[in-house]
Length: 84
Image 1 (cartoon, helix red, strand yellow):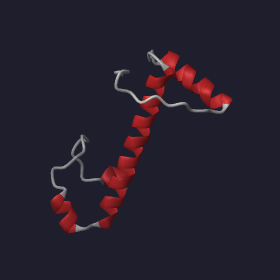
Image 2: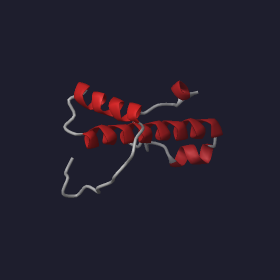
Image 3: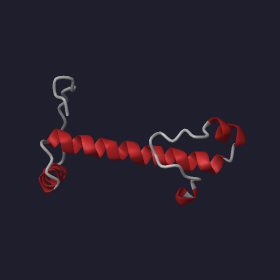
């Protein structure tokens, strides 16, 4: 992470969550707790994106599907069946 462009935040966590974060940081050889929190935020974003694609796959809207053809947000191309 580039800390000269990072936004500083102060957070409070329950003791068990703080312990887990520190254990995760050490086990995954992350440089700081900030790096561990960043990985958690990235996981939440990935989960949200997957949930939104599930909702989109359930819509069966041909116009939207045509609009989104080839647009994958960095994900591997898929027909969405693995999310249903």
